[in-house]
Amino acid sequence: MSRLDAKVAIITGGAGGIGIAAARRFIAEGAEVLLVDIDDAALIEVCEGIGSNRLSYTVADVASVEDNRRMVEVAEQRYGGVDILLANAGILGDTETIEHYDVARLDQVLAVNIKGPFLGLQAVIPAMRRRKGGSVVITSSIVGVKGAARLAPYVTSKHAVMGLMRSAARELAGDGIRVNTVNPSQTETRMMRSLEQGMNPDDPQRAQALMTANIPLQRYGQPEDVASVMLFLASDDASFITGSSYMADGGSSA
Image: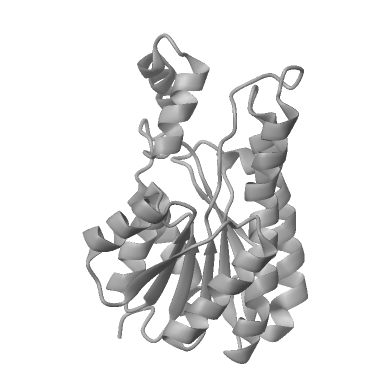
């Protein structure tokens, strides 16, 4: 048997690099997958590119109570339940000092990166109880355990979901619902292109070289590297793991 046979997964941030890689891995391991994102056209392109009859999508804003409830309802209607929530949606925000950071942009980063996983958990708990358990995997970051200059709102949000994960793990253990985080470092996605540009607008490749030099394995992660950890935590292979953070960072936190 494959590791996710008969499992139903919701993946937010489903049109991004890590979300796409996770969808491919989950489907290959037998899951039915509902991709969630705010970009309708991008979701259509992803679903057509993967080309599986066990994959579908719905457009939703993870910062909306109603949209989170609706995505769970869609998953139950299409697939009969929800076993896995991959709370992966996130935005970087601006590369800017605390002193000059735009407050409206701050609110947006915190809404997507903190409120999104919280509301996703809130919406999925009843559905997972109906299935007698489940697995929630939240995408944090290496900056969920350390700081970074000129990224304070993003760093703050990734620290916050670590607290959410630990609290939820204790609160939901009795329901058989496991909650963990995956903490990637630099990964080959659109977000990294934005970060490189923000760090060095005149020479983004120089920013990439400097960040790579600080990773012990001397490379960025691939989305598939992160998806492999997510697959493990979503599966029954991790049945005794909850309240934990898994670093996918090439040794950067060592």
